[in-house]
Image 1 (cartoon, rainbow over the protein chains, first blue to last red):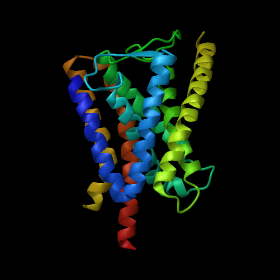
Image 2: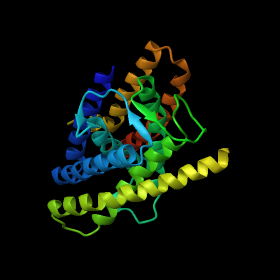
Image 3: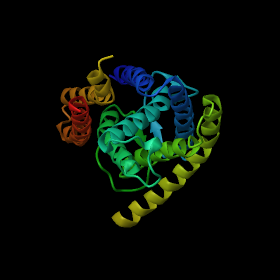
Image 4: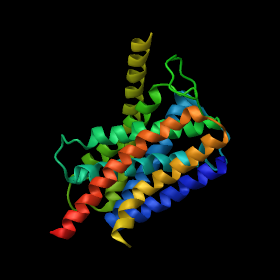
Amino acid sequence: MIWLIEISIILVTAILVIHARAVYNQSFVKVFWISGMIMGFLREYALNDIMKIYDYGDFHITLFGLPLIYTLFWTDIAYIGLTWSNNFLEREYLKAKPLDYHLPLIFLTMVLISFFFEALLSQYGLHIWKLDSSAKLWGNTPILAPFAYGWTVVLFIKSLKLLSKEPQQNWRVLVLKLSLAQPLVVLILAGLLLLSNLAIILVFS
Amino acid sequence: MNKLLLTYLPYGVIDLLLSIAIISELVNKRYDLLWANLPILIWGLVSLNKQVRKMQDDLVD
């Protein structure tokens, strides 16, 4: 089953790339997935290796010791969140006014994705949380998990919007700018997760 | 590519992962986890429904 989960994520990535090429263009695909994979890799390195808030199970396909599916997964669900919110609000987030309803809807989508995906991973011990918080949802998944999904994708999409404001940018320049911004995105994410966890501990203690 | 199929793709990938999750929960007899698949399914249907209606309206216009 672990193989099936890993291959499915790779298949999902291929399908979403085909969709993004048809709806946007080739440059958008490169910008979104290259910077998204960098964000995914840095995020996993920070949360797993540095902060040690969870461990991985027996993944088969790894990249520098990190499960490959995670570097793809965050970008995939970011694209899903972006598309679903665009469809619901009938307007494009990257062209919408700064304070729009997209980000709360993207956050909501991530929370709901975390509900089923963490439940799936917990059955095979693929994602073992090591937080002190006693507040748990299911399969030893802490209440922090939906926030981790939500903040990750909201910050990534926001960085994409902020840096793609300038019209007629070369996609290579945008990839470089966005990739260089990802360490900061992961740093802000780590800060938000610490604050969220503190709030959860205070509420449930 | 068919426009309706293209619209469905970002929803279909979640349906694929949901199918794996549901089959896995049934096989492992983890019926307590089945509820976790429902919220994203409903939200996906709401969002897809809105987009399909918009496409229908565009066709009428």
